[in-house]
Image (cartoon, rainbow, N blue to C red):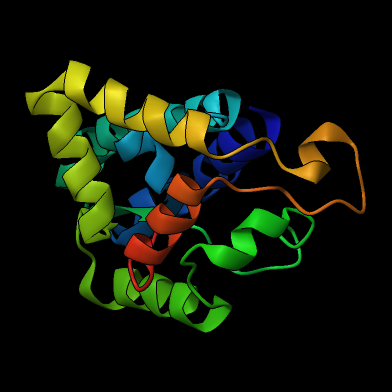
Length: 177
């Protein structure tokens, strides 16, 4: 919450008065695809990003007549040093840092309300239309993939994947999380 919500909020609230004075400004908040898909294993992280999403939606309504616009990017997983210890991420689709930067540039130039991948939108629609089916699907993938070695505090091990998990990884190639 300190970093993902309060930090972003403090910076934005510090900049908003000058934007209001100029009657012009644009805020880009980096959220997570997990907010759209309700990703298991990441409940605390997703909650902090969901708080930022909700604040951004409210602030966009409050500042709309002041010439200030907001974009939320529901960023999928990005291949950075932060995810490197989680070896299972070597086998799932990720964005390169350059692709993630392109999403931020798109937000700055086009100023849409939201930027999300097709997979994120599909997850959001599935949860809205058939929440129980979505929960079953997410639970199935949660049970299929073990906790990472990093999550267990083990620095060296490679996770042992079931045949089903390997098949799912192959099906998901080319789909950005």
